[in-house]
Image (cartoon, rainbow, N blue to C red):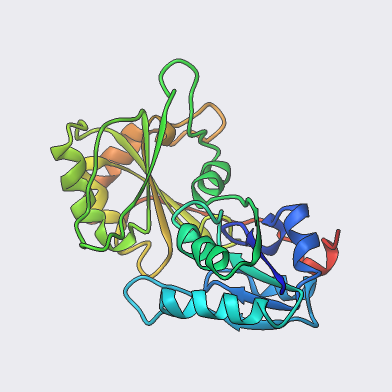
Length: 269
């Protein structure tokens, strides 16, 4: 009987995996990996068997029951199975269902945390999710629900919405209904943590205008305190974003944030 390690691969480039995660991945016999994990991570475990079990919203995905069965089957055949999850396993990662399946099979499990997309978005845009004085709480919400109903609230100073790229118009309406002022700053970040990360700034009233820019890309939306400009993020203020959004003939302003992500071969622990 083998062991199953649930490892957070981070939200993007291979060098965002933790040192503990990389070391454990290097010992894997079988790796069940998500759709949004960097292919360069294979360099950590070149001799392992890699099995794609990715889930993507609004497209064909591997069923959860099938993933559970694969985890148990492989763990009964080899010493170490790694379940490599994008971001952090415990944030919208179906971790509970998979842990239950492993436990019911009498198998040992370990969970290694990872960098979640909200943190990568905050780092990439240099906008802290918490702020001293008026940014004391953060809420994480998924825009993908079983019922298909998008819900928004005003319970935290910063609200972060995952998987929201196709529902920006609906999110704008729901935020307004929840009591957020129309001029509240919003930061939209797609492919957070990747070299081709895109970032655009909006007000709640004009959030739908970000849909074209971020179309087809995994998207995180930050609302409230965590979306405000800081002294280090340039001269473009939320007020300027609002003025730009109000011009029908202009595209939503954005920044293409590029970073030098070294290949995994330079990161072996």
